[in-house]
Image (cartoon, rainbow, N blue to C red):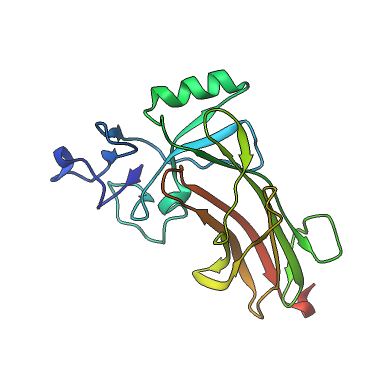
Length: 215
Protein backbone atom coordinates (compact mmCIF):
# COMPACT_ATOMS: atom_id res chain seq x y z
CA UNK A 1 0.00 0.00 0.00
CA UNK A 2 1.03 3.61 -0.51
CA UNK A 3 1.54 5.39 2.82
CA UNK A 4 1.94 9.15 3.09
CA UNK A 5 2.19 10.78 6.51
CA UNK A 6 2.12 14.28 4.98
CA UNK A 7 -0.43 14.24 2.15
CA UNK A 8 -3.06 11.98 3.72
CA UNK A 9 -6.75 12.95 3.60
CA UNK A 10 -8.11 14.75 6.65
CA UNK A 11 -10.59 11.93 7.24
CA UNK A 12 -7.63 9.57 7.67
CA UNK A 13 -6.01 11.57 10.50
CA UNK A 14 -6.36 8.76 13.03
CA UNK A 15 -5.81 5.98 10.51
CA UNK A 16 -2.75 4.53 8.83
CA UNK A 17 -2.46 7.40 6.32
CA UNK A 18 -3.16 5.27 3.24
CA UNK A 19 -5.99 7.51 1.99
CA UNK A 20 -4.03 10.13 0.07
CA UNK A 21 -5.23 13.52 -1.18
CA UNK A 22 -3.68 14.44 -4.54
CA UNK A 23 -4.09 18.10 -5.52
CA UNK A 24 -3.46 18.32 -9.24
CA UNK A 25 -5.32 21.54 -9.97
CA UNK A 26 -7.51 24.11 -8.23
CA UNK A 27 -10.48 21.75 -8.04
CA UNK A 28 -11.23 19.18 -5.35
CA UNK A 29 -8.43 16.66 -4.74
CA UNK A 30 -8.27 13.18 -6.17
CA UNK A 31 -8.38 10.64 -3.33
CA UNK A 32 -6.17 7.59 -3.75
CA UNK A 33 -5.91 4.41 -1.71
CA UNK A 34 -4.18 1.39 -3.14
CA UNK A 35 -1.00 -0.34 -4.25
CA UNK A 36 1.99 1.54 -5.66
CA UNK A 37 3.20 0.99 -9.18
CA UNK A 38 5.96 2.34 -11.39
CA UNK A 39 6.05 3.31 -15.04
CA UNK A 40 8.57 1.86 -17.46
CA UNK A 41 10.12 4.88 -19.13
CA UNK A 42 10.96 2.76 -22.18
CA UNK A 43 7.25 2.21 -22.87
CA UNK A 44 6.09 5.19 -24.91
CA UNK A 45 2.42 4.15 -24.59
CA UNK A 46 2.31 4.71 -20.83
CA UNK A 47 2.41 8.06 -19.07
CA UNK A 48 2.44 8.88 -15.38
CA UNK A 49 -0.36 11.36 -14.58
CA UNK A 50 -0.28 11.56 -10.79
CA UNK A 51 2.84 10.87 -8.74
CA UNK A 52 3.10 10.38 -5.00
CA UNK A 53 4.59 13.12 -2.85
CA UNK A 54 8.24 13.00 -1.73
CA UNK A 55 7.03 11.79 1.69
CA UNK A 56 5.25 8.69 0.35
CA UNK A 57 6.46 5.11 0.48
CA UNK A 58 5.20 1.66 -0.44
CA UNK A 59 4.84 -0.61 2.59
CA UNK A 60 2.47 -2.81 4.57
CA UNK A 61 0.68 -0.48 7.02
CA UNK A 62 -0.18 -3.39 9.30
CA UNK A 63 3.39 -4.39 10.10
CA UNK A 64 6.64 -2.68 11.08
CA UNK A 65 9.19 -2.20 8.32
CA UNK A 66 12.29 -4.37 8.72
CA UNK A 67 14.14 -2.71 5.83
CA UNK A 68 13.89 0.55 3.83
CA UNK A 69 11.02 0.52 1.29
CA UNK A 70 12.01 -0.14 -2.31
CA UNK A 71 9.59 2.46 -3.70
CA UNK A 72 9.52 5.98 -2.32
CA UNK A 73 8.56 9.52 -3.27
CA UNK A 74 7.65 10.53 -6.78
CA UNK A 75 9.03 7.25 -8.15
CA UNK A 76 5.63 5.92 -7.06
CA UNK A 77 2.92 6.37 -9.66
CA UNK A 78 -0.61 6.66 -8.34
CA UNK A 79 -2.38 7.16 -11.67
CA UNK A 80 -1.01 6.29 -15.10
CA UNK A 81 -2.62 6.15 -18.50
CA UNK A 82 -2.15 3.92 -21.51
CA UNK A 83 -2.76 5.55 -24.86
CA UNK A 84 -2.69 4.48 -28.47
CA UNK A 85 -3.83 7.71 -30.10
CA UNK A 86 -3.71 11.34 -29.06
CA UNK A 87 -7.48 11.80 -28.75
CA UNK A 88 -8.09 8.93 -26.29
CA UNK A 89 -4.99 10.04 -24.42
CA UNK A 90 -6.25 13.61 -24.02
CA UNK A 91 -9.76 12.46 -23.05
CA UNK A 92 -8.41 10.18 -20.35
CA UNK A 93 -6.41 12.99 -18.83
CA UNK A 94 -9.42 15.29 -18.75
CA UNK A 95 -11.27 12.67 -16.72
CA UNK A 96 -8.56 12.84 -14.09
CA UNK A 97 -8.63 16.62 -13.84
CA UNK A 98 -5.29 17.21 -15.51
CA UNK A 99 -6.57 19.80 -17.96
CA UNK A 100 -4.36 22.86 -18.35
CA UNK A 101 -1.19 20.98 -17.41
CA UNK A 102 1.57 20.01 -19.79
CA UNK A 103 2.58 16.36 -19.68
CA UNK A 104 6.19 15.23 -19.55
CA UNK A 105 7.12 11.94 -21.16
CA UNK A 106 10.50 10.21 -21.21
CA UNK A 107 11.47 7.71 -23.89
CA UNK A 108 14.57 5.82 -24.95
CA UNK A 109 16.38 5.83 -21.60
CA UNK A 110 19.87 4.45 -22.18
CA UNK A 111 23.12 3.80 -20.32
CA UNK A 112 26.27 2.05 -21.48
CA UNK A 113 30.03 2.20 -21.35
CA UNK A 114 31.66 4.99 -23.33
CA UNK A 115 32.34 3.74 -26.85
CA UNK A 116 29.84 0.90 -26.62
CA UNK A 117 26.15 0.62 -27.44
CA UNK A 118 24.76 -2.22 -25.31
CA UNK A 119 23.73 -1.92 -21.68
CA UNK A 120 26.03 -4.13 -19.60
CA UNK A 121 24.73 -6.53 -16.97
CA UNK A 122 27.40 -5.25 -14.57
CA UNK A 123 29.61 -2.17 -14.54
CA UNK A 124 33.12 -2.27 -13.19
CA UNK A 125 34.11 0.41 -10.73
CA UNK A 126 35.88 3.29 -12.50
CA UNK A 127 34.21 2.45 -15.83
CA UNK A 128 33.35 5.51 -17.91
CA UNK A 129 29.66 5.41 -18.75
CA UNK A 130 27.14 7.45 -20.69
CA UNK A 131 23.51 8.11 -19.72
CA UNK A 132 20.86 9.58 -21.99
CA UNK A 133 17.10 10.10 -22.13
CA UNK A 134 14.67 11.85 -24.46
CA UNK A 135 12.07 14.08 -22.81
CA UNK A 136 9.04 15.53 -24.55
CA UNK A 137 6.08 17.67 -23.53
CA UNK A 138 2.48 17.12 -24.60
CA UNK A 139 0.60 20.39 -24.22
CA UNK A 140 -2.77 19.17 -25.50
CA UNK A 141 -2.15 20.26 -29.08
CA UNK A 142 1.25 18.85 -30.01
CA UNK A 143 4.24 16.96 -28.70
CA UNK A 144 7.35 19.14 -28.41
CA UNK A 145 10.88 18.64 -27.06
CA UNK A 146 11.22 19.53 -23.39
CA UNK A 147 13.85 22.27 -23.08
CA UNK A 148 15.47 23.05 -19.72
CA UNK A 149 18.95 23.53 -18.28
CA UNK A 150 18.35 21.99 -14.86
CA UNK A 151 17.59 18.31 -15.59
CA UNK A 152 19.80 16.16 -13.36
CA UNK A 153 20.58 12.48 -12.88
CA UNK A 154 21.86 10.81 -9.72
CA UNK A 155 23.94 7.65 -9.47
CA UNK A 156 22.46 6.57 -6.18
CA UNK A 157 23.09 3.98 -3.48
CA UNK A 158 21.60 5.06 -0.13
CA UNK A 159 22.77 8.55 -1.12
CA UNK A 160 23.91 10.18 -4.39
CA UNK A 161 27.49 9.21 -5.27
CA UNK A 162 27.25 11.18 -8.51
CA UNK A 163 24.99 14.14 -9.35
CA UNK A 164 25.20 15.47 -12.90
CA UNK A 165 23.29 18.13 -14.79
CA UNK A 166 22.39 16.75 -18.21
CA UNK A 167 23.41 18.50 -21.41
CA UNK A 168 20.76 18.84 -24.13
CA UNK A 169 20.63 19.22 -27.88
CA UNK A 170 17.37 21.25 -27.45
CA UNK A 171 15.61 18.60 -29.57
CA UNK A 172 14.55 16.52 -26.57
CA UNK A 173 17.76 14.55 -25.99
CA UNK A 174 19.51 14.87 -22.61
CA UNK A 175 22.85 13.21 -21.96
CA UNK A 176 25.92 13.07 -19.73
CA UNK A 177 28.90 10.87 -18.90
CA UNK A 178 30.74 10.08 -15.69
CA UNK A 179 32.98 7.53 -14.01
CA UNK A 180 31.49 4.74 -11.89
CA UNK A 181 32.49 5.44 -8.27
CA UNK A 182 35.18 3.36 -6.58
CA UNK A 183 32.47 1.61 -4.55
CA UNK A 184 30.80 -1.66 -5.47
CA UNK A 185 27.16 -2.48 -4.87
CA UNK A 186 23.70 -1.94 -6.33
CA UNK A 187 23.19 1.56 -7.72
CA UNK A 188 20.27 3.35 -9.32
CA UNK A 189 20.15 5.93 -12.04
CA UNK A 190 17.57 8.37 -10.59
CA UNK A 191 16.18 11.31 -12.50
CA UNK A 192 13.35 13.60 -11.47
CA UNK A 193 11.97 16.42 -13.57
CA UNK A 194 9.54 18.87 -12.00
CA UNK A 195 8.36 22.17 -13.40
CA UNK A 196 5.43 24.38 -12.49
CA UNK A 197 2.53 23.64 -14.85
CA UNK A 198 3.85 20.20 -15.84
CA UNK A 199 3.27 16.74 -14.50
CA UNK A 200 6.28 15.43 -12.60
CA UNK A 201 8.59 12.90 -14.21
CA UNK A 202 10.53 10.34 -12.18
CA UNK A 203 12.83 7.68 -13.63
CA UNK A 204 14.75 4.96 -11.81
CA UNK A 205 16.88 2.16 -13.20
CA UNK A 206 18.96 -0.29 -11.17
CA UNK A 207 22.48 -1.45 -12.08
CA UNK A 208 25.32 -3.30 -10.37
CA UNK A 209 28.87 -2.00 -9.99
CA UNK A 210 31.57 -4.47 -9.00
CA UNK A 211 35.30 -4.63 -8.31
CA UNK A 212 37.63 -5.08 -11.25
CA UNK A 213 39.39 -8.11 -9.73
CA UNK A 214 36.09 -9.95 -9.29
CA UNK A 215 35.00 -9.72 -12.94
